[in-house]
Image (cartoon, rainbow, N blue to C red; front, top):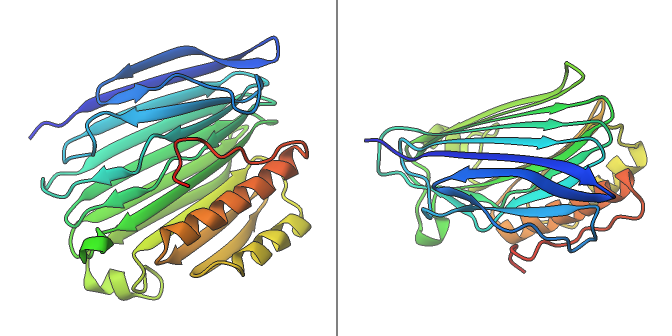
Length: 274
């Protein structure tokens, strides 16, 4: 069974204090909606749309994103991604980003719902120049829990790498198998259908900010963890509520944004659920 071969290539440049997309190529089922500037000319918000409504086995999606110096772009998706489980062949998604000096990329897609029986493999690599930064998150639901569906077969793999100046800052490999052991193990899902990872990489995060992230986590239902990196921080979530996961990640994102620039607050993208 042949699936979609979708491609997306975005490049941003600075023009008189404004970040603008200078290249925006997409092939079905991927599409880029019109960019907008709810925070002013400096920060470009772009929304990626998957026109087929969901991923099926055999789909291969490739994205390439480039930020030139002194750019700032926030990329998100128009809706939750659905990975269907009918075809017994994997969906593959690769994303490669390059962020130049004094540029900041915020990669903040909406959640991914992995249906029972789905096979999904995502590779995300981000190359930062020495003075570049990236903020990113990943939120995943295993099974359509509202319908009583558990992720009892299939697999999900996520491989994320962030490099700066040719040095690896953060390499994160995760794999969840659709088995009873994986769904209940303490070092896997432990009965929770939701898992999330948020990271800010490319600059040192102060001990005060890390403590504030931990204080924020105390207000959320679920299991949370905050770990310092050499140049960054990673936050983890495991639990049952997408609302709680999103609430913590948005608050953490706002805090880390202000640590990068005290004049910035989190401007909630209009496509996100309220």
